[in-house]
Image (cartoon, rainbow, N blue to C red):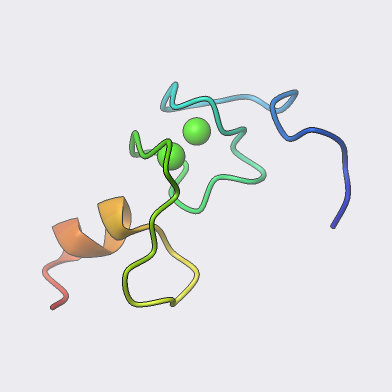
Amino acid sequence: MLTGAGFDHEDFDGDGIGGACDNCPLAFNPDQADSNDDGRGTACTSRLGGS
Ligand SMILES: [Ca+2]
Ligand SMILES: [Ca+2]
């Protein structure tokens, strides 16, 4: 989806990625890393105990 820069959206975690584009809106992960490619940031999946 192309809704603009993405930085215009509210950035809940302050990582510079707008919530609409952030793969983990509530965790600071400016690299948007997604180690298991499930569409959710590693910063989120890791804290859920997934391995
Ligand atoms: Ca963010
Ligand atoms: Ca984030």
